Each structure stands twice: as C-alpha cells, then as structure tokens.
Image (cartoon, rainbow over all chains, first blue to last red; front, top):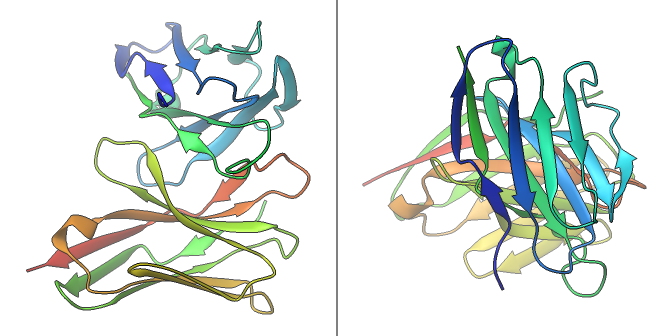
Length: 116
Length: 112
C-alpha cells in the first residue's frame, strides 16, 4: 500500500508571497487532515475533510490559509500572503473509511516551508 | 485549549529502559497514541491504547494509562541508539473523527 504523498518536500519563499502544498492520501481513505508543525512543537490541526466536505477548520487562519479537496481525493493547502510565522512543516494525514486501522492516522513526510 | 503535557528531554544509556510520560487533557478521549518522529521524517505510529484499557504491551513497548489522573506513559525496554527520536503523545479529540491533539514531544537521546 502506497503511503500519503506530499509535495513539494521543501519550499523557500519571501514574506507576502504565496505557496501551495499538495497531498495525495492513501487510496480509499475518506478522511484527510492538514497539520502545522512549528519547530520544537507538536503538530497542530489546521483542517479536517471527510470526503470533499470540511469537518473542522476552526484552527485554520482563514485570512491567509485556504484548503480544498474537490473530488474527495487529493487536497491542496494554500497560504497567501505568507508571514514569517508560517515557517513550519505542513503534514498531511489520512485514515480509512472503516475497518481495521480506522482510528489510526497515517502521516506523509511533510512539506517544509521557510518564509524569509 | 489546554495542552497535552510532556517532558521535553530524556537521556538514557543503551540497554536501559526509557519511560516517557504524558498528561493529557480530555477524559473523553477514546484513544491515546504514541508517535515517533525521526529527523526530517513524518510521524510514525508506535502504538495506541483504547481508553478502557490500563495497559498494553507490544514487543519492547509498554503503555500504561491512568484515566483518573489522565496520565499516559510509554516504556521502551532495552533501548537502542536507533530509538533516539522525538516521541509525541496524542489524544483523540471526541466527536472529531479521530483528529488528534498532540503534545510538544519528548526528545529521547540514547547514548552508547
């Protein structure tokens, strides 16, 4: 089974520029999450999708962050305009629809963003 | 919201046991998890425990859960240098479809 794919792995931008991250979850996984992990901290949930619908985006800074999962498979997370404090690793995770492992998030390797 | 609390650093000698402690926040959490993160890598699930259990053993790993005190611990027996990593405690957020609330992580250093 292929894992959660994320790209790009690394991105360096200047503040006020925009950036987009892409995630392809494990095939058949209905629920997808985006987490932000700032250096030295634990991951913080940004947004959760169930199929193509948003379940929880209460911690997403909506003035600059947006995310979509149009066909219920791939997802993109966009930041526009970026701030210095957005420097972090953006982790994507997914879980299956049901059955064994339905309570276990599988994480991708992450996309590391540096904002200068 | 409240924070899941973990000690930041732990250093042990190779072959000794390591114990990493965590205090979680929500007594309604259905599952409690331990994830491992190596440098430059994503999060790898180590183990999890259902909230109605008080202990789970999986090879070198033993998880203890004290629901009354909302305390979770991870014991690694015969710790090896390859166990050096950051260990995250996480609680499932009730009614959230298994979204997780993570601690800040404990950095484990295993010395020869």
